[in-house]
Length: 318
Length: 266
Image 1 (tube, rainbow over the protein chains, first blue to last red):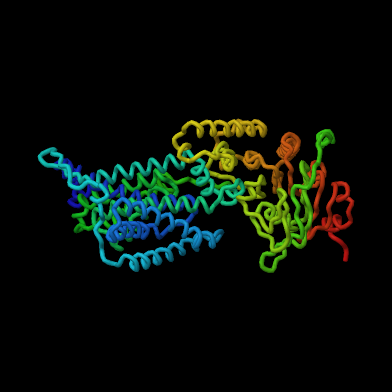
Image 2: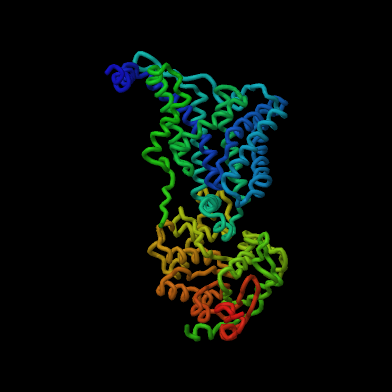
């Protein structure tokens, strides 16, 4: 009886007793949710267009951030370094298309998936070779990102909002809006959806698979760079960041592998869910549930909607 | 079908030439030293028993397969093999034996995708729906609506193609190929799996496309009645080799063709 009280009643009593803490937890959850959403977005872009589950998305985040910081440390001005890093992501996209996707065209998906493992280790090696393995500090202030925080007083306490988090949310929203417009309104967007549905039909109407692949890998690279800057500004830039790719998995399960809105909503749900879960229900089992609670949330959703929140329900005619 | 439909049409010079095409997959010889041509404005049929290499031939024409030997002549140039999107850019459209549509998209979007190569506006202008991009979109939309009217699929415009019955999916696929305004249209078994009424409709559409737009058509078909009715010339393949080539009447009375279809006593 006492246990049931602790699970179903007590957390809500706490929420009501200290609304400022609740708001703070929600905010923290939303902020990490935005970052999860960005990583998941990178996965979705590539999966939609080429059917490849890109295991290297996590390392692309690290590689982009490392390149940016590394260039700056070699004396390149911050904004020039940013532009150069975007060029590097374009070169990476072209390289991936030429050296991995093109030779493996029409191979089973699992082969392409394994190839992205190879890409992961290649990027780890290349990153360490050029920039070294030690953690670096993100050049957030040099890029004009704000630091410090706002303090909002409410209900006997206060809520603290980091300015960099607000900036992250705004930049992420702009990127998502931009991608949404690109994919829904333009010829490239229609071509991309076409490639996602059928390769040979897309080829037959003159859509070049190579071009589409370069575009999506480049878009995913730019998203990775944005993620790297935001995440790096909160901790530091090191290869440990790579594991955040694993955080994207429950987001993808939740949102559906093919849906951009799904990645966003999924990211926010997972972010908020794990923070709230950790703060209010964590103490019941001795805390520290944040790292796996996301998977529990995803599993619960899977029971009810196997295709994810926004995933396409494929209706097969028999 | 009535000879009247054909009477007014002028068959021109050779638009597509295939010379000594050979194609093998590992040890399997799909095509062996096949030579034939396609003339402007004609309906050219490729027939043959199962596994004769008909679809392979079509796939060579639009670059899905690269032949190991042989030359393809198109648009006044010689190619060792085509590239699919280059072939599309040169005006070769096609449909598939097992329908290949963009299942998640509506009928309208599927057909609009066929206009892909005809849209030139910068994607930034398109994203903003700005001036010239807006005009371009409207102009393409009009062309697509004409095709929709022509193929009598107005009522399913907004339906996702995955939900349509088979016969209509085939028609949407034809519409998408027509949206490219192809000079040469390759149809891989356009009537396969259709009931009699659907077949008659499809026959009518194929002939009208050929008649109104002057589109040169290469088609693979199993229904002999259809082939004999609508095609101007027929090439017959068997085990990857060409065994006959000529008008429907010539091919019908050819001993090698009869043997290939009915089997021959050894």
